Image (cartoon, rainbow, N blue to C red):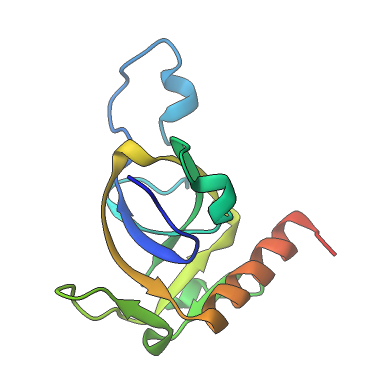
Length: 130
């Protein structure tokens, strides 16, 4: 599946070990797991024709918001046609992950430009990019 920067996609990480490299693809501790929405944060030039893209998971647990976990009001989350409206969410910029695009189930929406800029600032904070 082709993905675009700022798009919100349902992603399902592997839930059982399927290879010798299972330790590198399984989740543990506080890593996000299960089917959940991710915002694609890698540039379109990087995503096109590639089997992977960088993404940030979303959660509706708004109490987790801070300087690098970005609160996204529902009006900044634009649902695709036929998808349900979004709740207020938090982009967990400290949980950025490389996603296998074969495990993306469907596109469910996109971020506004302001929200995408805010997520970018959260990533800059996490990675100390100035």
